[in-house]
Amino acid sequence: MTGIFSRWLGASLLVLALAGNLSGQSISNEQLFGVQGYSVFERGYPFGVMSGPNGRFFLLEYWIEGKEGRPATNYYLQNYGNRDYVEHWFRPITEPGDAPMVPVKMMRTRECAVIIGRQFREEEKETHTVARFFSFDGTPTTTLPVQLSTYSKLPKRFTENFSLSPQRKRLMWMGVGEASFFFSVWDERGKKVWDKELTLPYVKDKYLIRQVEVTDRGDLIMLVLPVTPLGVPRERSPLLILRYRYEKETFETYDWPLEKEAVPLMMNMVLEGNTVYVSGSISQPEAHGFFNQMNLGKNDPGRPMTHIVFRKLDEMEDGLLKATATTYLPVPVNWVANYQQNGAHFKEARLVTTKDHVILMMEEVFVEKDRFFYYDIACVSFHPETGKVNWNQLVPKKQRDKQSGAFLSYVHGVARGKLRLVYLTERGASGNVYCSSIDLDDGKLREKILSSNETDLYLFFPEKSSMVSDYEMVLLGMGNPNQNDFKLFTVIF
Image 1 (cartoon, rainbow, N blue to C red):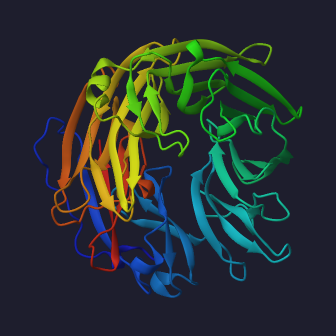
Image 2 (image 1 turned 135 degrees about the vertical axis):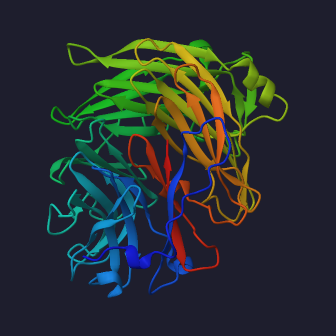
């Protein structure tokens, strides 16, 4: 297998160290990579970056037969050094003679890098969702991709989701088509644990499945929100946590009646061991807050955001879940002052856990015709044991672009005691690559310019970028806007 050095366009560059309060964070290395045999503008940029063990990361990229030792035209999983970008190995995601596979997701279990994609299965005359599991040395665990999807015929209005268990022991596929719910769960090397089409309680007409996660045992945890027949949040109905125990083939239901007939606006869930954390925003009648236009639909343009909520559920000795901490935080006064006049558009949310923190991050996102807007990030940290609020913080940003939001939003990670948020301050010549850092101890915000983007050479794709170690992040970017290449650069914290 050949090295990647012959693809490098020019010498490796150390980026200017700009003045700032956080001298420890900077772009440590960057490199342009030439694309050979096809147009990156037509075929697309590499699929994405994913962390790997031993100071390396994975890059999924399309290659033409004969280029740099690639034996066939295919997508290739490649293994690189975090800082030097030395290629250690590459492997096609399908074998010669097998049907092509179009990637849709990269995931990493305890023992494997997993490429999930869509593939036509000749024996069934149907397109299915499949996965290829690769050991960390590039060896596939099975001769052919395993089939995750379990339907016999692709349902109408079909959507699918994927999840990894807290310790990456189990991988879940979920497919939803009209009234059908399909599931399959796999171990860390691609061996099937179970699969089943389920009939879910409390879902049809009255409730919406917001999120599904898989436990290390292979059970399912579902966050279910009350909605009206029109699909908008319902008043005077509890949130539900459903647990499906696959060995017993039974459901357990746990209610969370919100205080004072509150309506959930945005909820997220994360698992940590045998603990379930739920956090998000609600609207409580007559409480103080600000108008949040979430684009819920023409029948519900938005509601005031009045509280940020948190709930912890622990598994007891009898095996059942029990709520052990609940918090209602009135929307901070400075948030109300900031958004009360014009409102906000908090629509996307993420949850991240550390030893002493469960952090909710909410991002403003809205679209007007062909213009995309990604604005502020609102963060709240809760103590994972007690639910006590550690701190809250607003990260101001104003990202705008036309036609696409590919360069908008942010990449997050926790490194050296701080929550790191890396993003472009603007799309285009006037912007910078920015890092906002929130100290986990006191919640203080500090900001630093990592690089100027005056020449458009630092346009990166947040969705294709990732933390690759406890203190390194690799960003995948466009490179030269008018040349057939792409760019990798490593941020070190």
